[in-house]
Image 1 (cartoon, rainbow, N blue to C red):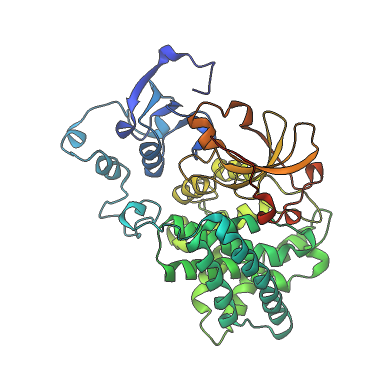
Image 2 (cartoon, rainbow, N blue to C red):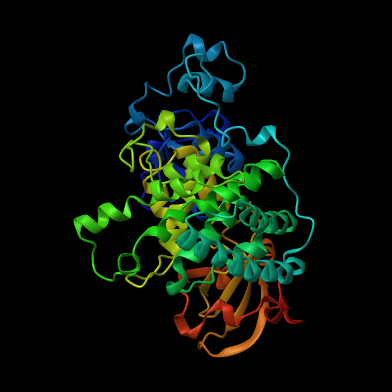
Length: 447
Protein backbone atom coordinates (compact mmCIF):
# COMPACT_ATOMS: atom_id res chain seq x y z
CA UNK A 1 0.00 0.00 0.00
CA UNK A 2 1.38 3.36 -1.02
CA UNK A 3 -0.50 6.04 0.89
CA UNK A 4 0.30 5.96 4.62
CA UNK A 5 -1.92 8.92 5.41
CA UNK A 6 -5.30 7.53 4.37
CA UNK A 7 -8.05 7.18 6.93
CA UNK A 8 -8.65 3.46 6.45
CA UNK A 9 -11.84 3.59 8.49
CA UNK A 10 -13.42 5.33 5.49
CA UNK A 11 -12.42 2.53 3.10
CA UNK A 12 -13.93 -0.82 2.25
CA UNK A 13 -12.31 -3.71 0.40
CA UNK A 14 -14.01 -4.52 -2.92
CA UNK A 15 -13.19 -7.37 -5.32
CA UNK A 16 -11.78 -5.93 -8.53
CA UNK A 17 -14.54 -7.50 -10.59
CA UNK A 18 -17.14 -5.56 -8.58
CA UNK A 19 -15.71 -2.08 -9.13
CA UNK A 20 -18.27 0.27 -10.68
CA UNK A 21 -18.34 3.65 -12.39
CA UNK A 22 -18.26 6.38 -9.73
CA UNK A 23 -16.33 4.54 -7.03
CA UNK A 24 -13.27 6.34 -5.66
CA UNK A 25 -10.37 3.87 -5.64
CA UNK A 26 -8.03 4.88 -2.80
CA UNK A 27 -5.69 1.86 -2.69
CA UNK A 28 -4.77 -1.16 -4.76
CA UNK A 29 -3.57 -4.58 -3.67
CA UNK A 30 -0.27 -3.81 -5.43
CA UNK A 31 2.04 -0.83 -5.97
CA UNK A 32 0.62 2.01 -8.08
CA UNK A 33 3.87 2.25 -10.06
CA UNK A 34 3.24 -0.96 -11.97
CA UNK A 35 -0.12 0.29 -13.23
CA UNK A 36 -1.30 2.97 -15.68
CA UNK A 37 -2.94 4.87 -12.79
CA UNK A 38 -0.40 7.62 -12.21
CA UNK A 39 -2.20 9.28 -9.29
CA UNK A 40 -2.63 7.48 -5.98
CA UNK A 41 -6.41 7.55 -5.82
CA UNK A 42 -8.97 8.31 -8.54
CA UNK A 43 -12.69 8.29 -9.32
CA UNK A 44 -13.58 5.54 -11.78
CA UNK A 45 -15.01 7.25 -14.86
CA UNK A 46 -14.54 4.79 -17.72
CA UNK A 47 -14.93 1.19 -18.73
CA UNK A 48 -11.23 0.98 -19.58
CA UNK A 49 -10.30 1.89 -16.00
CA UNK A 50 -12.53 -0.93 -14.75
CA UNK A 51 -11.02 -3.32 -17.30
CA UNK A 52 -7.47 -2.44 -16.19
CA UNK A 53 -8.30 -2.83 -12.50
CA UNK A 54 -9.68 -6.30 -13.20
CA UNK A 55 -6.60 -7.26 -15.19
CA UNK A 56 -4.12 -6.07 -12.57
CA UNK A 57 -5.75 -6.47 -9.18
CA UNK A 58 -7.60 -9.07 -7.14
CA UNK A 59 -9.16 -6.41 -4.90
CA UNK A 60 -9.04 -2.67 -4.29
CA UNK A 61 -10.01 -0.32 -1.46
CA UNK A 62 -12.70 2.27 -2.19
CA UNK A 63 -14.27 5.06 -0.15
CA UNK A 64 -17.50 4.01 1.50
CA UNK A 65 -19.35 7.14 0.48
CA UNK A 66 -17.60 7.73 -2.81
CA UNK A 67 -15.93 11.08 -3.41
CA UNK A 68 -17.84 12.73 -6.21
CA UNK A 69 -18.99 9.44 -7.73
CA UNK A 70 -17.71 10.98 -10.95
CA UNK A 71 -21.10 12.55 -11.62
CA UNK A 72 -22.79 9.14 -11.68
CA UNK A 73 -25.52 7.73 -9.51
CA UNK A 74 -24.59 5.94 -6.31
CA UNK A 75 -22.28 3.08 -7.40
CA UNK A 76 -23.15 1.11 -4.25
CA UNK A 77 -26.86 1.10 -5.04
CA UNK A 78 -28.53 -2.13 -6.04
CA UNK A 79 -31.21 -1.99 -8.68
CA UNK A 80 -33.11 -4.28 -11.02
CA UNK A 81 -30.91 -3.54 -14.02
CA UNK A 82 -27.77 -4.64 -12.19
CA UNK A 83 -29.36 -7.69 -10.62
CA UNK A 84 -30.76 -8.91 -13.94
CA UNK A 85 -27.37 -8.82 -15.65
CA UNK A 86 -25.18 -11.80 -14.80
CA UNK A 87 -21.98 -10.65 -16.50
CA UNK A 88 -20.44 -7.89 -14.35
CA UNK A 89 -18.40 -6.49 -17.24
CA UNK A 90 -21.45 -6.33 -19.49
CA UNK A 91 -23.37 -4.72 -16.61
CA UNK A 92 -20.96 -1.79 -16.53
CA UNK A 93 -20.96 -1.58 -20.32
CA UNK A 94 -24.71 -1.13 -20.39
CA UNK A 95 -24.52 1.53 -17.69
CA UNK A 96 -22.03 3.64 -19.64
CA UNK A 97 -23.81 3.17 -22.96
CA UNK A 98 -20.78 1.76 -24.75
CA UNK A 99 -22.78 -1.05 -26.37
CA UNK A 100 -26.15 0.70 -26.51
CA UNK A 101 -27.98 0.70 -29.82
CA UNK A 102 -27.90 4.51 -29.80
CA UNK A 103 -24.10 4.50 -29.97
CA UNK A 104 -23.30 4.08 -33.67
CA UNK A 105 -19.56 4.57 -33.28
CA UNK A 106 -17.36 1.53 -33.78
CA UNK A 107 -16.45 -0.06 -30.46
CA UNK A 108 -13.06 1.09 -29.14
CA UNK A 109 -10.12 -1.14 -30.00
CA UNK A 110 -8.93 -0.52 -26.43
CA UNK A 111 -12.00 -2.32 -25.08
CA UNK A 112 -11.85 -5.33 -27.38
CA UNK A 113 -8.23 -6.39 -26.97
CA UNK A 114 -9.26 -9.69 -25.40
CA UNK A 115 -11.15 -10.67 -28.55
CA UNK A 116 -7.96 -10.77 -30.58
CA UNK A 117 -4.95 -13.08 -30.48
CA UNK A 118 -1.81 -11.64 -28.82
CA UNK A 119 1.50 -11.35 -30.65
CA UNK A 120 4.11 -13.48 -28.90
CA UNK A 121 7.79 -12.55 -29.47
CA UNK A 122 9.67 -14.92 -31.75
CA UNK A 123 13.16 -13.79 -30.63
CA UNK A 124 14.73 -12.67 -27.39
CA UNK A 125 15.34 -8.96 -26.93
CA UNK A 126 19.08 -9.64 -27.03
CA UNK A 127 18.88 -11.51 -30.35
CA UNK A 128 16.82 -8.70 -31.87
CA UNK A 129 18.99 -5.76 -30.86
CA UNK A 130 21.52 -6.07 -33.69
CA UNK A 131 18.88 -6.44 -36.46
CA UNK A 132 16.84 -3.62 -34.90
CA UNK A 133 19.86 -1.32 -34.81
CA UNK A 134 20.56 -1.99 -38.49
CA UNK A 135 16.92 -1.40 -39.44
CA UNK A 136 16.81 1.82 -37.44
CA UNK A 137 19.89 3.42 -38.99
CA UNK A 138 18.84 2.38 -42.49
CA UNK A 139 15.44 3.95 -41.82
CA UNK A 140 17.10 7.24 -40.92
CA UNK A 141 18.60 7.45 -44.42
CA UNK A 142 15.25 6.56 -45.99
CA UNK A 143 13.42 9.16 -43.91
CA UNK A 144 15.94 11.82 -44.90
CA UNK A 145 15.16 11.04 -48.56
CA UNK A 146 11.40 11.25 -47.91
CA UNK A 147 11.71 14.63 -46.19
CA UNK A 148 13.95 16.02 -48.94
CA UNK A 149 11.47 14.86 -51.57
CA UNK A 150 8.56 16.47 -49.69
CA UNK A 151 10.45 19.74 -49.38
CA UNK A 152 11.84 19.95 -52.93
CA UNK A 153 9.35 18.03 -55.07
CA UNK A 154 6.20 18.69 -53.03
CA UNK A 155 5.26 15.00 -52.96
CA UNK A 156 6.06 11.83 -51.03
CA UNK A 157 7.24 8.40 -52.17
CA UNK A 158 4.65 6.24 -50.42
CA UNK A 159 6.27 2.99 -51.56
CA UNK A 160 9.54 3.98 -49.88
CA UNK A 161 7.58 4.95 -46.76
CA UNK A 162 5.87 1.55 -46.75
CA UNK A 163 9.23 -0.22 -47.15
CA UNK A 164 10.55 1.69 -44.14
CA UNK A 165 7.53 0.87 -41.99
CA UNK A 166 7.57 -2.80 -43.01
CA UNK A 167 11.04 -3.17 -41.50
CA UNK A 168 9.78 -1.69 -38.23
CA UNK A 169 6.80 -4.06 -38.15
CA UNK A 170 8.92 -7.17 -38.61
CA UNK A 171 11.37 -6.13 -35.87
CA UNK A 172 8.58 -5.31 -33.42
CA UNK A 173 6.87 -8.62 -34.10
CA UNK A 174 10.14 -10.46 -33.38
CA UNK A 175 10.62 -8.51 -30.11
CA UNK A 176 9.41 -4.93 -29.53
CA UNK A 177 11.85 -3.77 -26.84
CA UNK A 178 14.88 -3.73 -29.15
CA UNK A 179 13.44 -1.13 -31.52
CA UNK A 180 11.82 0.79 -28.65
CA UNK A 181 15.35 1.16 -27.24
CA UNK A 182 16.33 2.99 -30.43
CA UNK A 183 13.63 5.63 -29.87
CA UNK A 184 15.66 6.89 -26.90
CA UNK A 185 18.40 8.07 -29.28
CA UNK A 186 17.86 11.83 -29.52
CA UNK A 187 19.57 14.60 -31.45
CA UNK A 188 17.81 18.00 -31.11
CA UNK A 189 18.95 19.14 -34.57
CA UNK A 190 17.37 16.03 -36.12
CA UNK A 191 14.06 16.44 -34.31
CA UNK A 192 11.68 16.17 -37.28
CA UNK A 193 13.39 13.13 -38.82
CA UNK A 194 13.57 11.30 -35.48
CA UNK A 195 10.06 12.32 -34.46
CA UNK A 196 8.61 10.81 -37.65
CA UNK A 197 10.52 7.55 -37.10
CA UNK A 198 9.80 7.30 -33.38
CA UNK A 199 6.10 8.09 -33.76
CA UNK A 200 5.88 5.29 -36.31
CA UNK A 201 7.71 2.83 -34.04
CA UNK A 202 5.49 3.65 -31.05
CA UNK A 203 2.37 3.45 -33.22
CA UNK A 204 3.32 -0.01 -34.49
CA UNK A 205 4.13 -1.21 -30.99
CA UNK A 206 0.80 0.12 -29.72
CA UNK A 207 -0.89 -1.73 -32.58
CA UNK A 208 0.85 -4.87 -31.32
CA UNK A 209 -0.44 -4.16 -27.80
CA UNK A 210 -3.96 -3.70 -29.21
CA UNK A 211 -3.44 -7.06 -30.99
CA UNK A 212 -4.06 -5.66 -34.46
CA UNK A 213 -3.07 -7.80 -37.42
CA UNK A 214 0.09 -7.16 -39.41
CA UNK A 215 -1.63 -5.12 -42.14
CA UNK A 216 -3.34 -2.94 -39.53
CA UNK A 217 -0.02 -2.40 -37.77
CA UNK A 218 1.48 -1.38 -41.12
CA UNK A 219 -1.25 1.20 -41.67
CA UNK A 220 -0.94 2.56 -38.14
CA UNK A 221 2.83 2.80 -38.52
CA UNK A 222 2.47 4.67 -41.81
CA UNK A 223 0.04 7.10 -40.19
CA UNK A 224 2.59 7.75 -37.45
CA UNK A 225 5.45 8.17 -39.91
CA UNK A 226 3.57 10.76 -41.97
CA UNK A 227 1.68 12.61 -39.22
CA UNK A 228 4.07 15.57 -39.00
CA UNK A 229 5.15 15.54 -42.63
CA UNK A 230 3.69 19.03 -43.09
CA UNK A 231 6.38 20.40 -40.75
CA UNK A 232 8.80 20.23 -43.67
CA UNK A 233 6.91 23.17 -45.19
CA UNK A 234 7.40 25.36 -42.10
CA UNK A 235 10.35 27.81 -42.34
CA UNK A 236 13.42 26.57 -40.47
CA UNK A 237 13.76 29.81 -38.52
CA UNK A 238 10.37 29.07 -36.96
CA UNK A 239 10.99 25.35 -36.42
CA UNK A 240 14.27 26.02 -34.60
CA UNK A 241 13.38 29.27 -32.89
CA UNK A 242 14.52 29.28 -29.25
CA UNK A 243 12.20 32.08 -28.12
CA UNK A 244 8.41 31.89 -27.85
CA UNK A 245 6.62 32.06 -31.20
CA UNK A 246 4.70 35.20 -32.13
CA UNK A 247 0.97 34.91 -32.79
CA UNK A 248 1.59 34.90 -36.54
CA UNK A 249 4.30 32.27 -36.24
CA UNK A 250 2.05 30.13 -34.06
CA UNK A 251 -0.75 30.35 -36.65
CA UNK A 252 1.65 29.26 -39.35
CA UNK A 253 2.92 26.36 -37.23
CA UNK A 254 -0.66 25.18 -36.72
CA UNK A 255 -1.07 24.84 -40.47
CA UNK A 256 1.27 21.85 -40.64
CA UNK A 257 -1.53 19.22 -40.43
CA UNK A 258 -3.21 20.79 -43.48
CA UNK A 259 0.13 21.06 -45.30
CA UNK A 260 0.84 17.37 -44.59
CA UNK A 261 -2.57 16.36 -45.84
CA UNK A 262 -2.06 18.35 -49.04
CA UNK A 263 1.21 16.51 -49.67
CA UNK A 264 -0.48 13.15 -49.28
CA UNK A 265 -3.42 14.05 -51.47
CA UNK A 266 -0.95 14.76 -54.28
CA UNK A 267 0.58 11.30 -53.91
CA UNK A 268 0.03 8.99 -56.86
CA UNK A 269 0.75 5.72 -55.10
CA UNK A 270 -1.71 5.10 -52.31
CA UNK A 271 -1.00 7.55 -49.49
CA UNK A 272 -4.40 9.22 -49.39
CA UNK A 273 -5.83 6.82 -46.82
CA UNK A 274 -3.38 8.24 -44.25
CA UNK A 275 -4.64 11.79 -44.80
CA UNK A 276 -7.24 11.61 -41.99
CA UNK A 277 -4.67 10.80 -39.32
CA UNK A 278 -2.31 13.47 -40.66
CA UNK A 279 -4.85 16.28 -40.60
CA UNK A 280 -6.42 15.18 -37.29
CA UNK A 281 -3.42 14.42 -35.07
CA UNK A 282 -3.72 17.74 -33.21
CA UNK A 283 -7.48 17.55 -32.76
CA UNK A 284 -8.55 17.06 -29.16
CA UNK A 285 -11.09 14.81 -27.51
CA UNK A 286 -12.78 17.92 -26.03
CA UNK A 287 -13.06 19.60 -29.47
CA UNK A 288 -10.50 22.32 -28.58
CA UNK A 289 -7.81 21.16 -30.99
CA UNK A 290 -6.73 22.35 -34.43
CA UNK A 291 -6.96 22.85 -37.36
CA UNK A 292 -10.74 22.28 -37.41
CA UNK A 293 -11.82 21.87 -33.78
CA UNK A 294 -13.59 18.59 -34.53
CA UNK A 295 -15.77 16.86 -31.95
CA UNK A 296 -14.68 13.55 -30.46
CA UNK A 297 -17.48 11.68 -32.23
CA UNK A 298 -16.03 12.52 -35.64
CA UNK A 299 -12.43 11.53 -34.88
CA UNK A 300 -11.37 8.13 -36.29
CA UNK A 301 -9.72 5.77 -33.83
CA UNK A 302 -6.47 5.95 -35.79
CA UNK A 303 -6.38 9.72 -35.30
CA UNK A 304 -7.02 9.33 -31.55
CA UNK A 305 -4.13 6.88 -31.26
CA UNK A 306 -1.66 8.98 -33.27
CA UNK A 307 -2.62 12.07 -31.24
CA UNK A 308 -1.39 10.39 -28.04
CA UNK A 309 1.79 8.98 -29.54
CA UNK A 310 2.69 12.21 -31.34
CA UNK A 311 2.35 14.14 -28.08
CA UNK A 312 4.33 11.55 -26.10
CA UNK A 313 7.32 11.56 -28.43
CA UNK A 314 7.27 15.35 -28.69
CA UNK A 315 7.39 15.62 -24.89
CA UNK A 316 10.32 13.20 -24.42
CA UNK A 317 12.36 14.74 -27.24
CA UNK A 318 14.86 17.54 -26.56
CA UNK A 319 14.49 20.61 -28.77
CA UNK A 320 16.82 23.52 -29.43
CA UNK A 321 14.62 25.55 -27.06
CA UNK A 322 13.85 23.02 -24.30
CA UNK A 323 14.96 19.78 -22.65
CA UNK A 324 12.84 16.70 -23.12
CA UNK A 325 10.74 15.27 -20.31
CA UNK A 326 11.40 11.82 -18.89
CA UNK A 327 9.05 9.07 -20.17
CA UNK A 328 7.33 9.01 -16.77
CA UNK A 329 6.75 12.77 -16.82
CA UNK A 330 5.29 12.53 -20.32
CA UNK A 331 2.99 9.68 -19.32
CA UNK A 332 1.83 11.68 -16.31
CA UNK A 333 0.84 14.50 -18.66
CA UNK A 334 -1.12 12.11 -20.84
CA UNK A 335 -2.82 10.67 -17.76
CA UNK A 336 -3.83 14.15 -16.52
CA UNK A 337 -5.32 15.09 -19.89
CA UNK A 338 -7.09 11.81 -20.68
CA UNK A 339 -10.73 12.34 -21.56
CA UNK A 340 -9.99 15.99 -22.42
CA UNK A 341 -7.09 16.25 -24.82
CA UNK A 342 -6.76 12.51 -25.37
CA UNK A 343 -9.12 9.56 -25.76
CA UNK A 344 -9.24 8.13 -22.24
CA UNK A 345 -9.44 4.48 -23.31
CA UNK A 346 -6.40 4.63 -25.57
CA UNK A 347 -4.47 6.85 -23.14
CA UNK A 348 -4.76 4.31 -20.34
CA UNK A 349 -3.71 1.41 -22.58
CA UNK A 350 -0.75 3.39 -23.92
CA UNK A 351 0.46 4.34 -20.43
CA UNK A 352 0.33 0.73 -19.31
CA UNK A 353 2.04 -0.46 -22.51
CA UNK A 354 4.97 1.94 -22.03
CA UNK A 355 5.41 1.62 -18.27
CA UNK A 356 7.46 4.05 -16.17
CA UNK A 357 10.84 2.82 -17.48
CA UNK A 358 10.72 2.09 -21.24
CA UNK A 359 13.74 0.40 -22.86
CA UNK A 360 16.68 2.79 -23.08
CA UNK A 361 15.72 4.72 -19.94
CA UNK A 362 18.64 5.73 -17.73
CA UNK A 363 17.82 5.14 -14.06
CA UNK A 364 19.49 5.63 -10.69
CA UNK A 365 18.92 2.83 -8.21
CA UNK A 366 18.37 3.12 -4.46
CA UNK A 367 21.93 1.92 -3.87
CA UNK A 368 23.29 4.81 -5.95
CA UNK A 369 24.27 2.77 -8.99
CA UNK A 370 23.15 3.86 -12.46
CA UNK A 371 21.77 1.51 -15.10
CA UNK A 372 20.16 1.44 -18.54
CA UNK A 373 16.82 -0.36 -18.89
CA UNK A 374 16.82 -3.22 -21.39
CA UNK A 375 13.26 -4.54 -21.11
CA UNK A 376 10.48 -5.37 -18.65
CA UNK A 377 7.69 -7.86 -18.16
CA UNK A 378 4.35 -6.30 -19.26
CA UNK A 379 2.82 -7.27 -15.90
CA UNK A 380 5.66 -5.82 -13.81
CA UNK A 381 6.84 -2.69 -15.59
CA UNK A 382 8.26 -1.30 -12.32
CA UNK A 383 10.73 -4.20 -12.12
CA UNK A 384 12.73 -4.06 -15.37
CA UNK A 385 15.82 -5.88 -16.51
CA UNK A 386 18.72 -3.45 -16.76
CA UNK A 387 22.45 -3.16 -17.19
CA UNK A 388 24.28 -1.31 -14.40
CA UNK A 389 27.05 0.82 -15.95
CA UNK A 390 28.05 3.10 -13.02
CA UNK A 391 28.79 2.02 -9.46
CA UNK A 392 27.40 3.77 -6.36
CA UNK A 393 30.17 6.41 -6.60
CA UNK A 394 29.15 7.07 -10.22
CA UNK A 395 32.35 5.52 -11.59
CA UNK A 396 32.22 3.57 -14.84
CA UNK A 397 32.27 -0.21 -14.38
CA UNK A 398 31.98 -3.35 -16.46
CA UNK A 399 28.22 -3.64 -17.15
CA UNK A 400 26.33 -5.92 -14.76
CA UNK A 401 23.01 -7.41 -15.87
CA UNK A 402 20.32 -7.09 -13.19
CA UNK A 403 16.85 -8.66 -13.31
CA UNK A 404 14.78 -6.79 -10.70
CA UNK A 405 11.77 -9.06 -11.10
CA UNK A 406 13.88 -12.15 -10.35
CA UNK A 407 15.44 -10.39 -7.33
CA UNK A 408 12.03 -9.33 -6.09
CA UNK A 409 10.76 -12.90 -6.20
CA UNK A 410 13.47 -13.96 -3.76
CA UNK A 411 13.11 -10.86 -1.59
CA UNK A 412 16.43 -9.26 -2.56
CA UNK A 413 15.36 -6.34 -4.78
CA UNK A 414 14.98 -3.54 -2.22
CA UNK A 415 18.40 -1.86 -2.65
CA UNK A 416 18.29 -2.26 -6.42
CA UNK A 417 14.86 -0.72 -7.00
CA UNK A 418 14.67 2.34 -9.25
CA UNK A 419 15.03 5.55 -7.25
CA UNK A 420 14.65 8.05 -10.09
CA UNK A 421 14.76 8.42 -13.85
CA UNK A 422 17.69 10.41 -15.24
CA UNK A 423 17.96 12.51 -18.37
CA UNK A 424 20.22 11.44 -21.21
CA UNK A 425 23.56 13.07 -20.58
CA UNK A 426 23.36 12.85 -16.79
CA UNK A 427 26.68 11.54 -15.44
CA UNK A 428 27.94 11.64 -19.02
CA UNK A 429 25.70 8.78 -20.17
CA UNK A 430 24.27 8.72 -23.68
CA UNK A 431 22.85 5.38 -24.78
CA UNK A 432 24.27 5.74 -28.27
CA UNK A 433 27.64 5.12 -26.61
CA UNK A 434 26.38 1.83 -25.15
CA UNK A 435 25.59 -0.70 -27.89
CA UNK A 436 23.51 -3.43 -26.28
CA UNK A 437 26.00 -6.18 -27.10
CA UNK A 438 28.49 -4.34 -24.90
CA UNK A 439 25.99 -4.18 -22.04
CA UNK A 440 25.61 -7.94 -21.89
CA UNK A 441 28.34 -9.65 -19.93
CA UNK A 442 28.91 -12.84 -18.07
CA UNK A 443 28.42 -10.94 -14.82
CA UNK A 444 24.79 -11.47 -13.93
CA UNK A 445 22.87 -10.41 -10.83
CA UNK A 446 19.42 -11.96 -11.01
CA UNK A 447 18.75 -14.67 -8.45
